[in-house]
Image 1 (cartoon, rainbow, N blue to C red):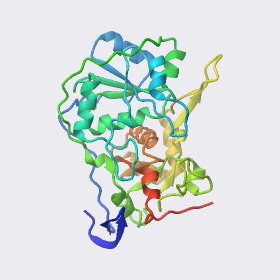
Image 2: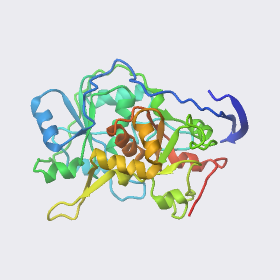
Image 3: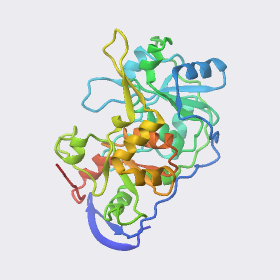
Image 4: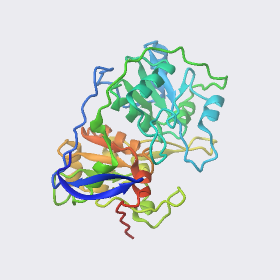
Amino acid sequence: MFTALLRTVNRNGANFSLRKRTNVKFPVSKPANFMSTTVATPYLLSPSQLHDEISSGNGVSVLDASWFMPNSPRKPFQEFSGKRIPGAHFLDLDEVASPHELGLKHMMPSERVFADACERLGIEPNSHVVIYDTHGVFSSPRALFMFRAFGHQKSSILDGGLPRWEAEGFASVGIPPIEGEGSTYPTPVLNRGTVRSYEQVVANSFTDPAKDPSIELVIDARSHGRFQGTDPEPRSGLSSGHIPHSFSLPFNTFLRTHTIANSSTPYTTFLPEAELRQALVRAIGADQAELVITGKRSITTSCGSGMTAGVLWLGLKLLGAPDVALYDESWTGYATRAESRIEKSA
């Protein structure tokens, strides 16, 4: 894919080539295949919209895709078992994933692993899949990215998650969860234009995008301190800093925090479109933002481990950007490799 050999490095004892080109061409995101192609399906649903969907009997599949940082004492499946939206099933993003040579978690699953998970969860190709998490907006966009990348376009997230659902007066249940009835889900085809690899990101990083309009922009969802290298990473022994020529756009910049009356638990929702655009402009500049939104420049989202990169991916899709990819390994995969170039800036 890349034309000029730059250098050969050693990756876990195996030689592979990093190739550099002055005009890096990435695959354009396209609908994956014949799977549910209802392009009008909204990315976001409110609690009342989800309630109406469930009540309609039109085949909605509700999934709790809550995920917590490795150093958190919270256990997502235990919380799901104690409280969830009626009829919801639990989607374990660390389990529905592919193994990785560096031991990274929640990497994109293979096509059959994804289909098998859908069958266990009772999801059919035409099911409207609605995903939520217990933060409001945190891990649910990553799950939505997975469904859309495998061509299941009839999928949404619950904007505000379980906390907003309850705050707006809708009931949750705490009885033991029931196994799904099972279904048949044909093996889909992954839209490979939506996922970036380490080699692609490295090759792209050698050229300043300000000097070459064909170079893909990379935005990083981690905090400014971690991006700049002034704050530590939550994963022990991992250097902070950033990929050369990438931009800092913390994922919570795309979100609004809400408080619940008589509760200490806040939740998040996406900002309105105009405010999302403003946040993007502040991060990459007005000219580049316009090119991204109109599809004249491609962009990749990254974060610590590929989870909150989904928030940036979804925010960009809400703005109408057509060519948005996600760096699956993200910073953990990048910075773990000794050969990676890491920039730090105060």
